[in-house]
Length: 369
Image (cartoon, rainbow, N blue to C red; front, side, top):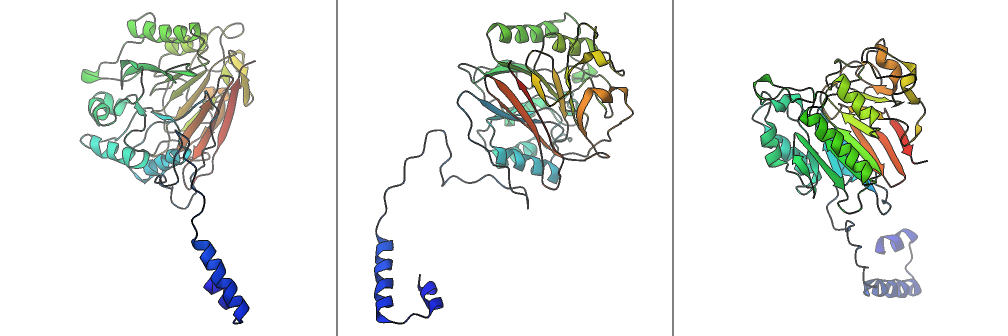
């Protein structure tokens, strides 16, 4: 106020009296601040860290009965990982699915956990499923990661970190999350058995069927290994297991392992596509090829192996390339980042949000008829 009057050069008595009156009025107590709405952050709450010079994406208010989550794998402890975690913090999801391959080095499990909790908070549900780098203990130990980043969601069933499922919210759920571990080795080089009609196959199939019988709107399956990929790997998740997910019309399948972002069109079997065959392309397997899809028509697969470590090339000459609607890798629109998903009873909307310094983006929706 004094600085403002000085700029005007006012020295008259009337102006001086007016300034005193205004100062006195400003000192009077104003109306009390309204009480915060339960479940919303207060203005005094510390803000999540920003990602360098890039503003954190703002989280829009969620409609009632919605679930907001992020997902990414292949993280590490480098600057890239911290940038991606900063993006997640800015998005303010209700939970995050960490799709395996965490620290990439044995003995620094606590360092990784501290990095996560420093940015997302100790009570945030940073939900784990193992990758190949910690499944066998060679580059970390999934048991130690589970200790320092334990499950935070109520109602979980199964073995957290390896094979588990949970409905969110616990009452009147909108999404059933099913996390599994096909195609990677555990202790002594032994993979878990997800072959047709095995115990783990049946556990997964029953979890999908039960979600449908309970009219849970959306089913999301997460695992470290993909099947379809235009990165460095083949169908590690297993052809039969992948086709089972499609046949049961899982809405969204998430994975990591290949250090690329790749998202398929909506895929379906039956009719002109008896089954999905890796390392080949069948046009009859394409159920919908635009960005707005219909629930129940097929399955979308998204690999989000861009959580912080170095990227792989996208191989555009791969026969499977025509299954993909969007791709990003070291040689093609490179980006670290996260998938950001919001689900309501009628719509599942997803977008790729890049970390600071990257510009690649992708988005798609699946809606009820």
